[in-house]
Image (cartoon, rainbow, N blue to C red; front, side, top):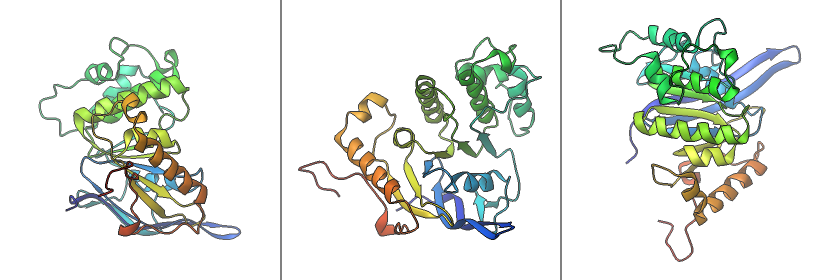
Length: 279
């Protein structure tokens, strides 16, 4: 039996009016996400992934359909959602500590006030750097501050918009590992946009493939079968890692409007290892 949905995205659509006529970006995007689940939205650039995420953030209004989180309809931004963008979007005139403290000050439900900005900075490996300003930090360290700020809200839903795409390969892997560690400790519900197949396989419980635009929708959903906690070296050593990776890349290559819409029968999973049943 599937767990109850915590995030319900129902028949979501977004159309913009342009001088050339209506431009339909997303059509009939329907997805349920369980509490504590880590879901990655994957697809080519321009397929509408960030449009869906911006609607979840409350920064964009859907043309059709809607979103509920824990039974409450999304009709604007809120502190129940923590957001990390491609760049850290820190306030440059505030110290690192004050950037995180600003988020903490927005949360009124904190019970005893024992968690401080320094606590969250320490959790992302920035202990003792609270007095520094964003300009004094590398891009990777700035993004760590953004992650600390998002987690400090103790959000019901964490929304990540390609948060590591602007970083070099080594820093990206370090922050992926950091995110995995933080998520294991908190088990926040996460929806993350990415175009990196390996990143999605490392982090996600499910990978939701979007068709190419215009009028993009869900094309296929892959369950990621790797047990948690995960170790990068362990999972890339598994034969089913490469089978699943190849299956996802094949869908990306198909990825146009002719990709079959997802149905319960179309949900993807890793092929069975030789000599094993797929059930």
